[in-house]
Image (cartoon, rainbow, N blue to C red; front, side, top):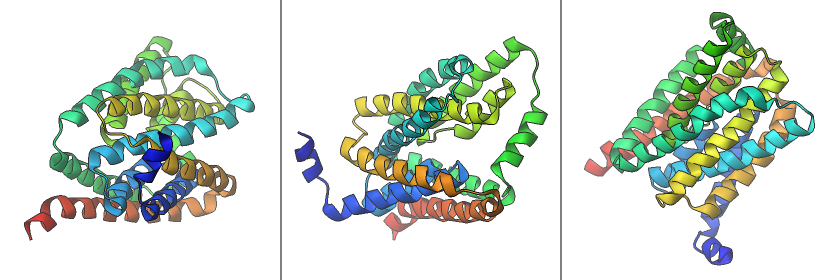
Length: 272
């Protein structure tokens, strides 16, 4: 069965998908963000999957890549599951809601929303091109919350938001998870470990929902996911702060261009 599914994919497309995974994984490993936007847009523009299919494939790839990174942190005892429960309580149902809304959103409108969102993300990253750790420290200071009940409620709310974005656009929300776990007082390594654990759960649950709606090409997701897993683990080892600001600007430019291309292919080119 798997062999027959694989035969349905063109060999050239398979190579392109592996390269997309490698490229996105490198961005994830070096910057910790923007992998989903890159995967969705390139799967749509370069391979020809629909927006809905591209999101489903990206979610499966994200689940694979995130889980592999989670295992590394778990082996090094850098995962605290206690605070993750509250974030997962929001992200799991949120991912189902996001996938359902995505299913009801027509292809053209979803592509337009995705394109505009990517342009806005690109502009934000370009203006805020700073080290991830510096940004996290600033946000943590702004959001100091001592009341444990308030922290838990905030976790559920953030979890729902991230879950919806994951199911709707394929985004993994790692930065949001990381910030909330830092607010719980966890050290950075355990916060990152918890964040990738939550990313794998959220992406996995959203993948199941998209699969039920017929929007997940399993073989394509595995190919992209393995590429992202390999390059993500390798590039993370060589990441350094001195080049991250410049890298973020490059990523911002790439995301903005891809967003513009999606809008053009959805609204402009068909009318010419």
